[in-house]
Length: 120
Image (tube, rainbow, N blue to C red; front, side, top):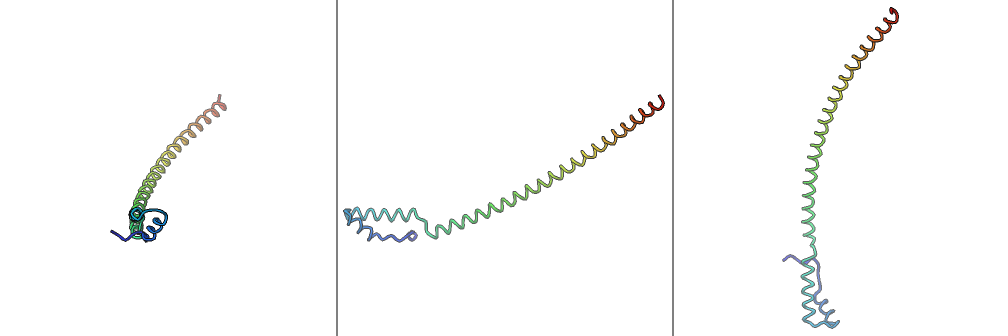
């Protein structure tokens, strides 16, 4: 068994209980149970150090996973942006074709109307 989490003076505890009306057997049983409870439920510095070490390791793993995930998300985002840029450029080119075509059609109509008005 590891060393107790805290020092507990069972002799002093038993003396106080017997001074307040407990029998020697009752006081000893209570003292023994108190020591067991303290040893079972309180963490030692060693226990805390182990937990701290485990937590640091887990946090390091989580940090690595997050960095990897962020890198993947960034790569996917860059790819999506590039695809969107390509679509925008294609749409721009298509609109430009339509605008030029409509401008030519409009100019043709205007010239025809002006020609018709001059030479009815």
